Amino acid sequence: MEQRATQDVSPYRVYSRGEWATLREDTPMTLEPDEIVRLRSMHDRLDMSEVEEIYLPLSRLLSLYVAATQSLFRAQQDFLGTKDAKMPYIIGVGGSVAAGKSTTARVLQALLARWPNVPKVDLITTDGFLYPNAVLEREGLMDKKGFPESYDLPALLRFLSDIKAGRRPVRAPVYSHLIYDIIPNQWVEIDRPDILIVEGLNVLQAGRLPRDGKAVPFVSDFFDFSVYLDADEDVLLRWYVDRFLTLRGTSFADPKSYFHRYARLSDKEAIATATSIWNRINLVNLRENILPTRPRADLILKKGESHLVEEVALRRL
Image 1 (spheres, rainbow, N blue to C red):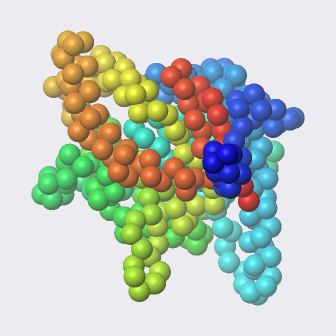
Image 2: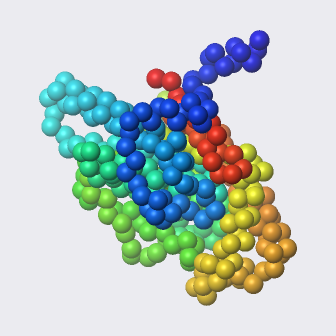
């Protein structure tokens, strides 16, 4: 009885994979098989059926949301008598390390950019707003990289505020996963997109509210829609270890890699090292900072061990 009462008051409608797939209706497939291969991240299970059954229904839903938001924006302009620049629609994609955020963000970008009206769709990751390693080392935060305190939050908030205000162009720093650091004096310019996808670990983080009621902006305040990639802890650990093992022969093998010292580890040593890193850093961040933000998402994609989405939860309006 108590479980039924909890479901009745849930802010989400929950769909099985099959139920969600029917919501695609006549949304056309605009991606080719070779494109899907290029879009997926290492070890991610992304194929034509995953796009058809999960991401095409989501693309259809987002097309409705974007149109409704743009209509509301024009209505507000008429009411205020203003002629502001167009307001970009911002989508946040969050979740744990190894959950598949990058793949989801890239697939959404590819699908949304091929809507009939051909919108301009840009994608950034919040990695570019991490403090440089020199700052993290000085502040004793290298083992907290990816935690909320490791980001230059004021810079990220200014960036999103400028995007939402329609300013042009807006610059974001560039992060290199090879050297595990911000690349000095390199920027990516975002020039008034119709849609901007923002991917990162802590994009739905809220933080403690002030007692005096002053306005405190959060990254998610600038989102029009948000997606959380969800999976069980033991599954995420397996995916993280599998990825670590593969990276020994790819990016870790590059002498320029920050993690080059791991390239020659045996399987046993690599598994132990990856598990230790996960338990000391990523699991702590997941439990303390990332997982608590899951209920703030508009859509939750729950993945199973095979990397396939098994359940979709959509926030009620």
